[in-house]
Image 1 (cartoon, rainbow, N blue to C red):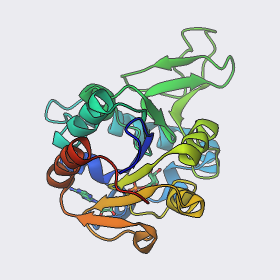
Image 2: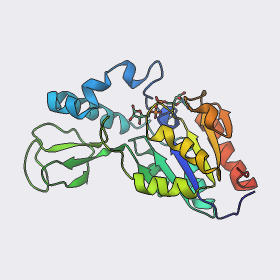
Image 3: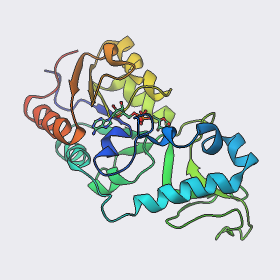
Image 4: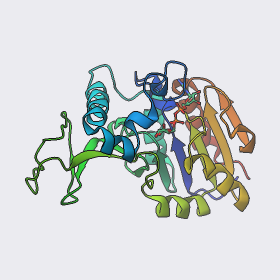
Length: 243
Ligand code: APR
């Protein structure tokens, strides 16, 4: 086993929120089966038709506030790991929902942004936002209209928090990927980055093998609400396996 105060880096994707009632992207019933990325999730789409893009995120923001959409046992288990593990646990999520926060995770990076935040393109104000947004909503800070956009990283834009993420990937002893298909970089490349260093045990927890499945030291397949709590229990009891 490695020393007890080791750093753990966890990457989550849409699969961890599926059992909370939120759609994934690439499953057969996923978001990209219903709407094209090029129409709603690129800077070009926003310039071409801002109302279409705002409406797409308004619907997802409203969906996130549905009473039945709550953290599930997988989110809860990761919050417990952060609380009970003696070393640092950095949770990097590709998700823009707030279920990790609501479960109690704090050391968290939303590398693709947050659905419940908006930013003003005129004054750069970043603010919590739970309601609909339109192309004429005035910015509460600078008062100008038409500058508020979802604080979400679109395809072709730079993900957030990358310096801290790579710093932690360089020092971690355990890298865990949960509920992601491994289709989108740079997140899909994190396991390779850890593997090159040869100092960490890497585990994939998913419903089925991801694109990068063969790169992991270990893989556990099944619904997140079952396999994640059991995995956290094991790590807290037995520690991290040597790489
Ligand atoms: N438990 C565990 N895993 C699940 C579950 C579940 N209940 N349901 C689905 N999965 C798995 C699927 O098998 C799939 O491998 O979750 C993964 C979801 O993959 P995607 O839909 O591609 O979502 P994600 O990997 O998070 O997408 C990454 O792509 O579109 C962009 O910005 C978007 O952040 C997103 C990024």
